[in-house]
Length: 195
Image (cartoon, rainbow, N blue to C red; front, side, top):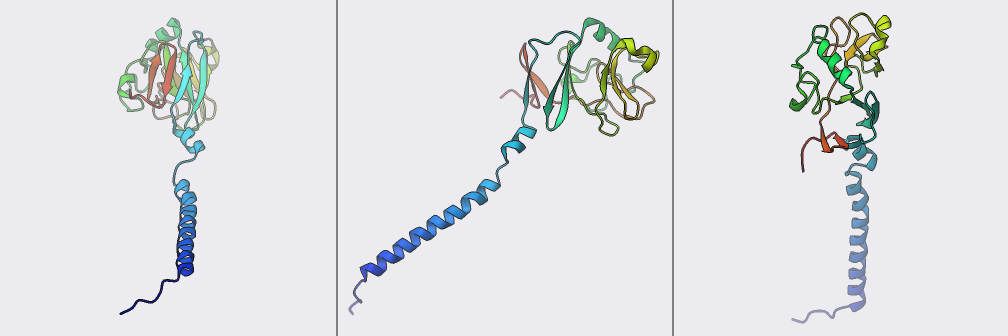
């Protein structure tokens, strides 16, 4: 039994067609697979943010963006820290029992180091952004005011640890995001795990 002679031109055409088809499939698959990976913008929205606190002066509030929200880093003065301790009777959750902070910030000052407060600057009532108000604003804010954050949208008040005052619309304390110190002069917001 004799096999027919091999047509080398036809074989080369089939090999070339198969190669071009394979390249076409890979070419079509690359954009499809690439579309499944998150964009740089999407990665940035959830990525941790480094905050340089080296030049931060006592009493100064730094604002950075993390996950599309403002994050406050407040360098508290010794007087501000003492004012937080005076607020235990006027806030609804003085011991931070509602889990609005990582365990390492479940303390009266709601921070790792007393002098630096890290909070998500979004009111827990309807998502407005409160403003920092000094202790000197007692006439406007009321006799129990020792400084803190005031939400002008509906009147919610928070002390200098982000704890919510009694009798205001906001139901719970401001959120403390996960964070850690990379050094004495840098904070990483959005990650608290050593890698």
